Length: 286
Image 1 (tube, helix red, strand yellow):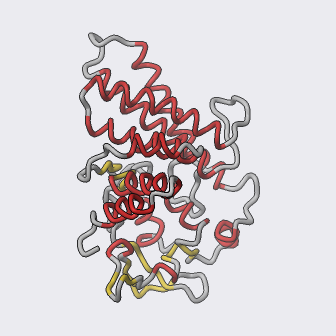
Image 2 (cartoon, one colour; image 1 turned 90 degrees about the vertical axis):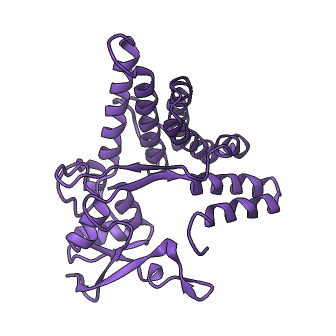
């Protein structure tokens, strides 16, 4: 829901269904009690919910983390590895809250700024890095390192962000494994666009080319179906092909773009270009 909602807000997607509430969502004229903030994790969510769903994810992960920290290794097999995973997921939930909200709260606590939310996320990632290192869990360690680099960069600490992002290997990718039955686990990009025709790819992201050929990073398809919003055609993202298609949370390319940002800020443009090319080279033909 975050992916679709932020895509609509930032004009990567357009509304394809004739519904005034959907038009309000796209043009960012939503009311304070709109589903964007109050909607839950189930159902079709024509106006994708973000605040409550991310808060639910954060709460579930933090609750699991607290339970795991209270139990013993004898009680829970692979406890340290599970601590790393729960802490990392809590960190990402907080990171996305900080990136998408002007403010948020944790467990009915005080209103927090994005910078404070990023600090909270970093504390979860710190735990995840420590636990994943102890458990020798490379996948979760890299997952947490990129997350921590992301929130450090968000708070302006680019040098530390690059330190975290640099060791992430080129083969690294961390996916959310989607499922077809439970609405909370379905690939919502496919559900909202290809299946329900509620959104379409914005025209500026159709037929994108690079050096005269189709850009493999922006692969889309015209379904030749019309939406109910006047003048809309349903274009879909090829990488979200079914309800059960896995969705990437983070990967090596993101780590390299964080490195590039840090290099550019330090006026190391050659180093920045090398990191950008490392990210590009994860795609065939780039």
